Structure formats: C-alpha cells, structure tokens
Image (cartoon, rainbow, N blue to C red; front, side, top):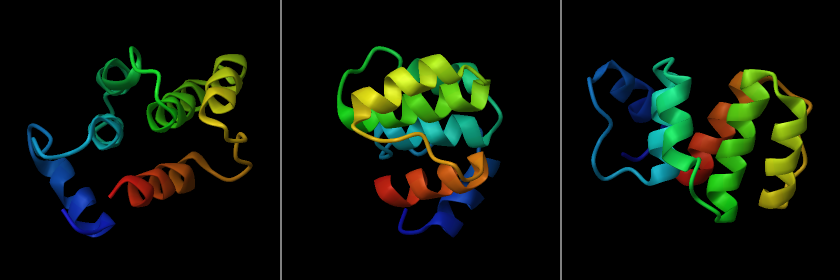
Length: 95
C-alpha cells in the first residue's frame, strides 16, 4: 500500500492487509468503525508509535485524560484539529 487513497479503498475489504504495521491495522479497524478492535491492536504495546495511535483512539472515545496520558507517552501533544485530520496524518505517517 503506497498512499492514503489505496488505504481508504482497502477499508472495503473484510480484513486488513497482512503486511500492514500494527499501527496501520489499528487505524484500519478504526476507519471501519470498529474502535474496540482498533484499540486491541495497540492496547498492550509500549512503543511511541503505538502510544500515539492509542492516544488518538482515546481522544476519539472522548476520554481526554487517558488520551493526554498516551500523547505524553508518545512524546506528542494533543492536536487541536479534527479527529479526521489526525487519522489521516497518522495513516500518512505510518504508510
């Protein structure tokens, strides 16, 4: 997968591409509307990239405190732009 257009098109599939990183799999499930499955992908991981996706997911959930904790773990600040923009930026970052 080379770009966000292909990534978005892949959301029509039943399962994510097996070659996707765990961060992209989480974003793929989130793009499909399955927050729980997305969260399961990164919930147990401690690296900064996974923490950033984890933060985004808690921000989307509406849990600002928990999101702030994970943004801090990722070494990032909570964005002031939309969740849709953050999702796209994260997909682009991990592609």
